[in-house]
Structure formats: C-alpha cells, structure tokens
Image (cartoon, rainbow, N blue to C red; front, side, top):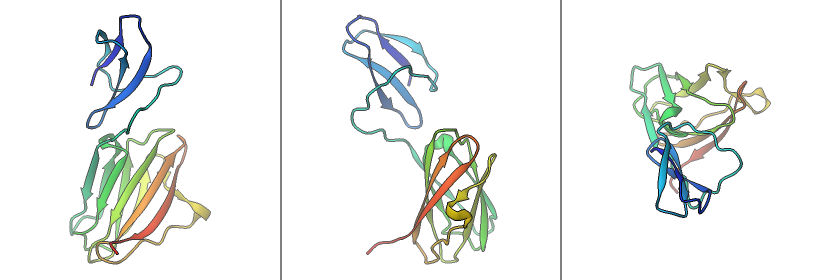
Length: 167
C-alpha cells in the first residue's frame, strides 16, 4: 500500500491502514492525496492514532515427519503458528528470521501425536527465558502453547504460556 498525504492543507492526521503484510499511512480529512512513497517502511515523526484494529497477516509453518529444522519468517507477520502435528522427531530447531529491535512477536506452537520440543534461535542467538530456564512445552496431541517474544536489538526475550486446549 503506498504512503499518501493530504495536499488540501486541511489536516495532518495520519491513520494506518493494513494490507496483508504491510502497513501504509494515510492522511484523512480530504479526498485529495499525494503519493509520498511506495515503500512499506516509513518513519513517522511525532505520533499517530490507530482507529480500530491493526490486523497483520498470520501464517503457519508446518514441520513434517522427517524435519529437524524449520524457519519462521516474521516478514510474513508478527503472529505465526508452528504446527508440529506431522513431526515424529523428539526435537526441532526453529530459526526466527527478520527479527527487529523494538518489536514483539507471538508464536502459537501446536503439538502433534509425537511430542516435539522446539528450540528457538535467531541471528541474535537463542531466546532468553525467565530465570534462564528452558520452558516445559505441552506434550498432548493438539495442545497449544503460546510463545511471546520481545526483541531489544541485542537479545530476544521469551515467555511461554502452556496447555491451551478446548474445554
């Protein structure tokens, strides 16, 4: 989505609108706009308001029976699902790519019939968990765990909430 600006001089209010995996900034207040850039990465000086929801894309990375490694690309959205339902491995190494400083991410981990322990890493190293202790992941078929991540540009911090299941 291109970046546009109001050229009528009637306002400088900017509101984001969401595409599948990119965000554009649109000035509201008049129907006359000028194209500023077609880039999806734009800096906004000052502040802007979000009216409604920002709904980024959501994708699923499926780990098959023989896979011992997988990659989650956060350019596909900040919310991802890691499906281990086809895995028959005891563990799988998951590389987190396109992590950005100041960003937060979520990964829903769905277990399969064979419990699989995911180990997350990135170009910044392994994910750091509370007390330096690796989480205990759910082991039951179809159980979901939620990994919440935050990156400060030097490290990636992770918090895991476990055993989400249907009542």
